[in-house]
Image (cartoon, rainbow, N blue to C red; front, side, top):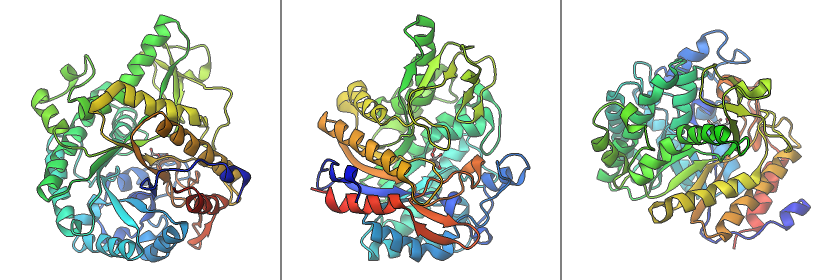
Length: 441
Ligand code: BGC
């Protein structure tokens, strides 16, 4: 046990500890599922950094028992995974999730499925309103089979990234470059959340969440042009998703840009659809007026932003960075959580961190230990400040297919040798296991 582990604060007894994965990133077994938009996207040369695909990934469908044993030995309470919609569409596709859930329950680990983590069946597109209804039908099918053993559900993962990267910038599947014309994708996913929540409620579910990505937006300076640009960015990346879900309204100026009967849809999106709100946190973003002073201003997370946007993303200096180049700023997580509490007050459901983690190479991953140590302290500081936060999930259990980065970025607590599929727990896995033993009340 490292010295820093000794000093970690004690967390509440009923705090839910978990790790997260997603179907497309780990499962493999493509022969027993239909194609997803990610299969099409990865098949196109140039879309994935190392030219790889997720055809095998971590071969999890075949090796799930070994992976559940790793979860058990780690000592987590819960496992957040996603259900592949294209697999569920295939005959017998739900059988795998039934086996996985049974294995988890047998090992005393709570299953927390996410219904959509970006791997949309080919033929569907969130640009179309009908996809929201199809999503609700699919949710009903899954809950019918698993609802007797699964009580805690997540509808969507990061609709912001699916909108921004998949439909606005085209660096993720389905690879569209619609810029602001991608806004209906956000609305239809939110509507899909609302309709899926109705389907889950109809099946008796009382524990529904969503996993949205959020991070504080820091203005590059106090100059009004920078402040205004940062506010715009905060609306597009944060409030566009949290306001409708929590307040039942879009930030000013957005509703007019959305399709359909927006006020009726907002009721579906917000009325009794959340028992808790999941936050995926990775980093803050510094934002200034368009055309910032440095050339890096048009780069965001490895994505080149097109010219003509009403903001520019600036480099955050003075912090360590991960292999992704993302700054490591644990205190921004406390800022984010306290900010949510202050903004939404009594309307805010209990929170959970549904993803937090970092990309680093190596099995003796001391940087990941430092990252987790810092972020757990930041979570604890938010608890001390009175934020109602009920759980924390690390991204990710094991190295996996990191979307457009292929296998070049490793987020796992467990190392995966993609040639042999050998799993090797990293130093961070042992650190977290010891932390979980020692720091529960
Ligand atoms: C996603 C994960 C992804 C992680 C690291 C999140 O945006 O939900 O699927 O692997 O970040 O990039």
